[in-house]
Image (cartoon, rainbow, N blue to C red):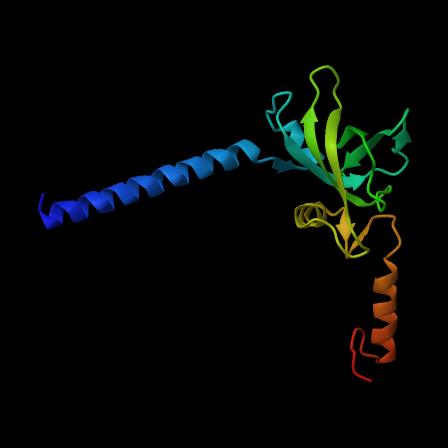
Length: 174
């Protein structure tokens, strides 16, 4: 083999190695991806029972019901549609009605309920998962960090009061 042929063989071997690695990574990601849906999206989605998805929205007021042990059922809404959710486990401390939530799991073939294996709630008064907040704002359910019928967060009120009095809110300098 000439020097040029050896160089081409090394380049071809390296490229084939990279292509195989990319395909393996893409295959691994496709197996672990859980697509995000809002309750209103599920009417048009063609999901098979057992397909893992993320369901996001607001916990509907008056829908949280505690069962035996650590089983909890509640309803997730986006203002257009609602989806009953069943979860067995310990809920996050800040889980409550009227707050943003993202659940991950699948629909059970035996029941119409969404069976969640993880529940994520917002971690402070100002955070909501970006996908959920954007969709709820777009649909007119979530306005300026508060859901319809909900009081504004305490931090929002203190910032507004500070802005009205001329104070700089959040500044560390005297």
